[in-house]
Length: 222
Image (cartoon, rainbow, N blue to C red; front, top):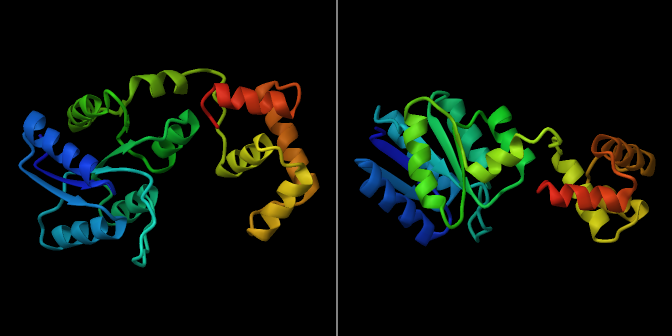
């Protein structure tokens, strides 16, 4: 079983809970905890330099803002930074994020080994995921895996999610375009936004923009 694990989680109670259950149920000998991504990466680099590398990273995706200056602000950036040094380290994400498209992107783009959704059964699923990943298998929380396996799950980009969110808030295409321009989000022209919405409506077989927003919410994509 994994002997040395790095846990990155900004909430102390969850951080300690993860460490405790890994020690009690898995028998992990050494667990280091970090509440900031930069702190986690520093501990990883130090252990790697000392030739005592971590076997497994368990990380959240979202980390709250703090007063300290940060280079790495989220779990995806932490995974990328660690994998640039040690491509073979096993990675399990433990997060509240439950959008199937987002989870699938983590497997496709970040090459994670396991995904556990926080919740009532989260810690038990985390124990199971560690066992599966140790045996070179992948693990996904059952309800997320079920949603991911649906044939009608469409891969939404972050741009699409932001676009649909503003649409669901009642903004017009002109207002969305203005917001995108002010925040340097591209493409931001009215014609580009309209084309993307038409493509999304076609992909989801939605009758109109309201129907599109409702469908993506029902699928857990928004």
